[in-house]
Figure 1: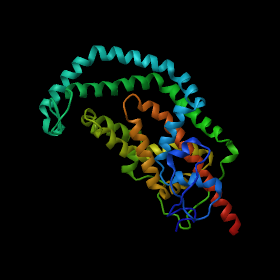
Figure 2: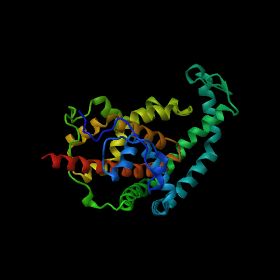
Figure 3: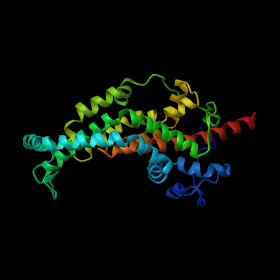
Length: 312
């Protein structure tokens, strides 16, 4: 049985002081919770909403986007220059290769010169596929030149997001079990999920199994995002688990209790990060969204701990 904090029906809530709350206005359960938890509980009903929150805050909060751009602008310029030169010299060659590939596999691809899965398209499909392939390559160049600085930027936006909520290290309390009967878990992941959720699985899925699909709209990105979803969510909450000093078993139980929350959040985050070029921006905004989600989860942990203390 889940704790009484989990809700099943909702009633109206008033607009809160935080601008992003208006994006997720909905009804809230009649089950009594403290006033300061109403908006957090509303957001917790649909974890992918935190991805939208992350994008919103990165685009509107100068304390987030200004230092991020300052840290990444030089690498972005260098990667863009290399990508432009690469495109100039290889576009024609790659387009010709794709024409030959599609001509030899029309049934598998579902694509031909001017159709996509049997539907007419307003552009030459070979040109589109070449542009898509080049955008993936340009993303690689950008990632190479940004590798160190973008990692620093991600850590900084996590810290700045929590700072903007007025939370310091003392905010994170020891783990509290929220379910009366927590689900049994294996601390070691099943080999299939471990393979496809980690870096090796990501490499196999993207570079081997999904390589042909990468030329076609959405297919490769969506399938890859599904395989990466749980691993992406776990990685995005690494700082949260570290702040609470949670053991591997506690992390496994915590994520199992919220399995579909983590899958949906991770899938949405991985889907956006998989978009060529602009996906790099989402790797930053997703950290902001993950920090906001961690903040609300921790507020719920505090509430459950206080309720258990009263019962004792």
